Image 1 (cartoon, helix red, strand yellow):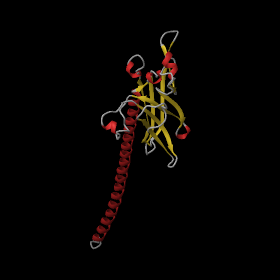
Image 2: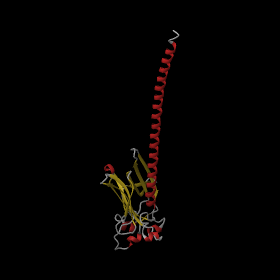
Image 3: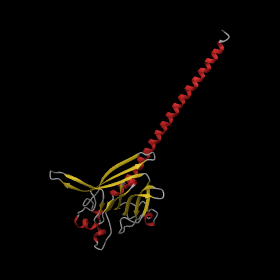
Image 4: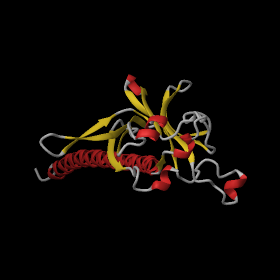
Length: 251
């Protein structure tokens, strides 16, 4: 009996070793899986933060331009003048056949796209340009691109010419709404009338103020689709300076 004891002890130790290896492999697999789950979650958070930052920057650029919108009274004061000024915004087909805004306007902002020309390099930027924003489909790649258009010179057509720059290929919605007027209620107070398209009627508003040459406020709604499929949205409202708060904006 004493001679068999060492063999029994060795067999028991081997079983313990196998059990220990199995448990270690199981724990390692659990830790490995948990690590990659945390890592993937971290990547998703980083991607979401990156897209949120991109959306904030795009919103700021558009709102900064819109905040500087101008209606040029002198541009239409001449009876022989037939040019556009103010804001022209219309609805067009966008991603997934949804309606999105296409907007063009005059704005008192520094040039972003013409810093290579001599007059800008010499500090002679006129600080008045045509600006436009739109979502357009790149048919060659089947990708929707959010673009900013800038025309250095003011001309008769507010919606054409200039240089375009692709700002993002993640934007899936771009909506601009306008506070057209405030209607007084019989019971007191007023009701806001918002519209999703705006076209400055140069002659009519110049002569009578009706319809208004510029909206009282603008609401911008934008959505981005992140690489991982998450949709990020933002909406902001800005008040515009309409006559007579700053007469120089209308000269």
